[in-house]
Image (cartoon, rainbow, N blue to C red; front, top):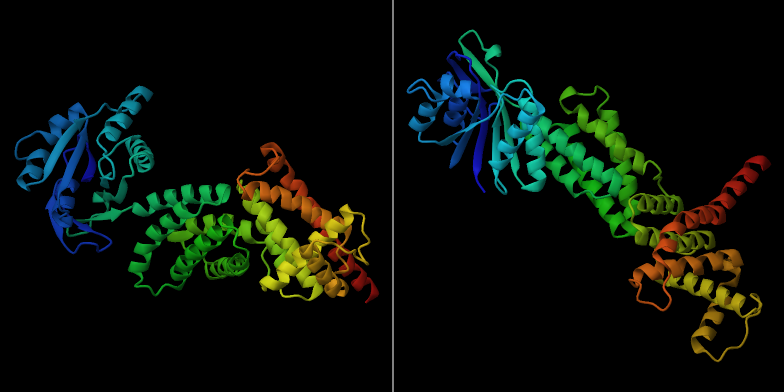
Length: 440
């Protein structure tokens, strides 16, 4: 791991100017022909190594000349530096050579500063491609992307150095959101969001409401998708609604579409599309939406778990029981199991039958006590719960059961289970609502 400044040097006879940082990250300024020298002198980065890429012509014109060249300037400043010769990048083969030469000079976990002031033609594009590749393969960290804007010099011959790191962060956000919306994995997105928002928050001293709200939203995104990954039904109900509300607030606050942060909010719209089904006090449909998201992300175990528990949610709500109470949830599950037992033994659901099995007898007593409240549990509902439970258990017990269901069956049937859930529990509600409106 090292700290490196990667920079390119051209053939131009550069004019001297006094460089300073336009973002006020350094109060110092330095007069030089070379942005590289000014960066080294003003930032004073400990143990920095400067790696300068040049063509043969640039090497002769601006690197090697004694006193006038960049090499002597850096050596006089006691900065470790080296030159790497590169082709001009006029063909695909030369572009690949540049790619490999840059990549070979990046080590594991390097902290990299980039100066693109004097890079020509395709070099900035090639260089950013190398860095994005190295961030994944070598774990390097891009600290700053610097550009010395000589063309923007002021009347007193002072030229600003701009930091373009924000555009690299947008790339990280994009990679992160792609991973998030395709797999439900939030870590990369939230980490990129935190790194991107940090300088914006610093610039506004934490007083920018939109930036603060976006930071809060990023944390809520992590909570929500972690709940989804761990199949946490109770907190996801709360966090899903809160996330949707936060996204709505951001949209309302960002009506003017501030240019410096607009790309981030385009990305947030993608996330909004995944949680727009959430509504206050709509537990059953909210959890069903979570099950569908899990299928989209390939989280089949979580999808089966959400669906099975959502049957209990529905029955508790219909019967006036407390879906938050373990005792009520267990009572409903026991009644459903007894209903299935009665069907299998061709027993009469209303009467029950003596059994020498104490556990079964206890369940039958429980059934009689809850008969009025749970009489709406049909044979179809009971069978559906039983079948769904078998699929869920195949996954939860890691296949360590007698005659476990095949992987293909578990993967193929989940959408059928979702459709059947909607038919058993939601279409009935829609019909009932329609009948009420007709009566009114």
